[in-house]
Length: 121
Image (cartoon, rainbow, N blue to C red; front, side, top):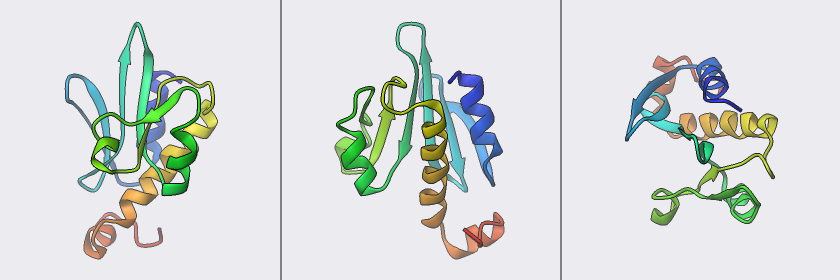
């Protein structure tokens, strides 16, 4: 997945916004809450960080090409960083990004979800 592919996919999800911050990371939010972070380097390629369920976290943290997300996981949050497509291919990554969007949206207030048109989720 390229950075452009990542940005296009995240943009296709409902009620999202994009900002580049934290040293050039492409951060996607639903409401005012982060659901995906990606950074690019020539040496490492595209690294994508996303929120997961507890079960997915327990599975993915042990898979080649994935790791607990730096900073977030060390604070007890269930976030994974996909560093390579070795265990999580691009199609699966899109599924995880969609799930991350839903997990984060579900934690928004009822009013925020209504304002964003997310009440059906």
